[in-house]
Image (cartoon, rainbow, N blue to C red; front, side, top):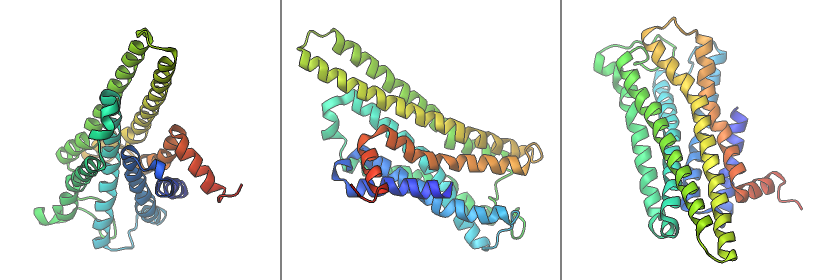
Length: 287
């Protein structure tokens, strides 16, 4: 999984930097998602692997444990928020059409990404850093690495709603609206008495749009499969620690990270330009 996450997302990042045709606002969102998933592969997965194979013994100290948890929780949430941004961007494209290029500039994109990072850093960050100071004691055992609020049901429930259920609902609604817009536009173009060339062009554009909508739907499905089990188990453990075994919980934790491994392949399948660049990189530019 580490190899897939680091290798796959590195190919996306290198492709974006190397190919100027890929440097669009929409692909800039994909770039940020690839960077987020790459950091999960470089930071979260390797250190947690050590923690797992040593039977949950954290050898890196409590200070680094808080830093690790802060980074991991922020990256996981940012990954979800960026999928919302990507879905919203596709909805704006199919709604505004030609006006999209002039209104959705890189400046607007940077603002959206900046707001998503602010949200990702602020939801769990203060609690991870200061929970034990606020309550005057630590609930985490010595040489263990876990969040202090792991068994606080109210905090876990609220943050789970914010982190998964609200984003998942938002992404589902956005992609449903995208599909409806595409179907309506395809029906209008079919009924209009335009020339054959215009009809062919618009029909081609509407397949492309339908393909993009299906790809986003696949992202939503992947999000549900990878994230929902972990989120539900976290809520259950908050009030019933013995209801889910440690091995099952750790499996679900890695399933959550698996999303970062498959994201690059979903993008490559959806973008012929990304696919072309990735093939060139894998072949080391040989003819």
